[in-house]
Figure 1 (tube, one colour):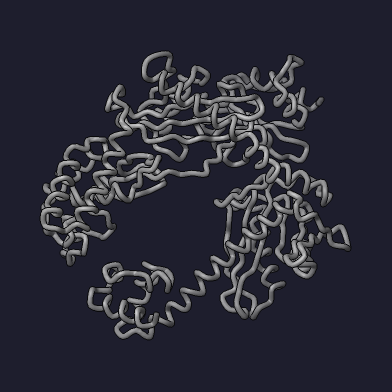
Figure 2 (cartoon, one colour):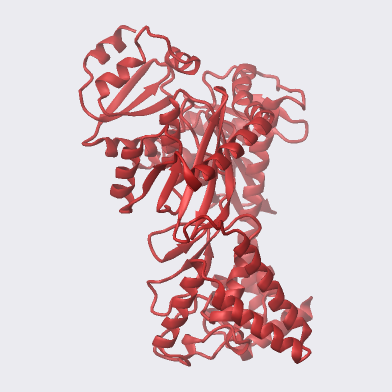
Length: 602
């Protein structure tokens, strides 16, 4: 504590970010401060604190800080460090659902319309779409009514042959130069108005076409248009009559029982209620105002910002508004609703948050047992030197030594961190040598440590090898070569679920119901799945090339074009003539040949 007191006395009176560490040097909390000296010292005062804060302070062995120019810079840095370190005592937003948006690629000369789940700084986005509204059906309506393109075909100086969508009356085919730029721009303008909630024109066109098909006794087509009209009705019913049609707002409410918290987000676009999402959060050492502010910052890291965020009084309104303006160059009003229709929306969000919290506590507790608590138990049962926050598991997949691949999967606090998964193509091993393949993979992994790449490949606390004693010994040799002695190493043998460690001659067997074993099994199974997926992809590409050579008219260039577009034999087998013809250098005639070849093969 003496060292901490000395550090506390040297804290500057500047804005910045502070990072708390435990005795193992693991980051357990990241916070921002308007004045570092005042904020950090508060943790070590003798005054009464919430139970979670007291627990965190007991684990603080050291801290460091980063001075920033402004509090806005501190907020941005805090968010980045939380995402990087995933500290135990911070709010960690885990969103299992990513709802789709419809994107109009307005930067293109002839804008297309597509479905996406990723928000970038190009184009215009509409959504998110939730609550039973399917983006595919909305794209169908756009094609039927406004005839704008949904494909990514390049439009150049040489006209292309119109595709099936044009013949079905669902695309103006700008790629074939059969419409003017001005005519297409008018259709895009109408499309944007439709996506903004002006459904009258679309409804009129769909109604007219449905009646015409019915009169001509083309009942299947009439039914298709009727289904689209029903989708429009569903969209119209989501409009809240008392809301301004221009209102693009997210309504955010947080509720807590001081052990766990829940957040409900109601999404409103153009006065239409799109739906809502619920989030369960383990309560942390933050005040309610800081917790809600942290949630909002993390939530909009991957989402389109609305014009307004309607929320409770407990958030840093002015700071958030400045943050969004500086970081995203967008004016967002944080509305602390007190009365009127916006207050009614907030009441609705609060009720949803309370309901979700009351029904989700058992689920949250079970999740903790399966993840963090399982990792703590694993540390105890295996005698690990420290808590295995970052666990990596490695697996090899091949058939008779051909197309050997390896996988690395990562669990953080017992949960899959899919953005950190990596694949290895085994390059130096001849034949089906599992031990040598593991060694090559581990050498390449450990080579990242102590280099500039360690930022992307942080040092793990525990490495798990899929296999038995032999695989463990083979990898241990690589550890010895590299002089690595601060990473724990174990293996898990699948048949009897035996755990082999370096500190015991006998294997360890856990009860099959033990959550500590279950977290290792999930890790191992995920590594196996990831390796098999990669192997099949490589193997099918290999086979794809040999199969395509048997088709008349398919040379090397056309093979590459098909492989780049479809990737696997299965996808080519399932492709239509139109899809095959859209590959570079494959016209309709050759597409017919390929289509017939695979249909005959089947």
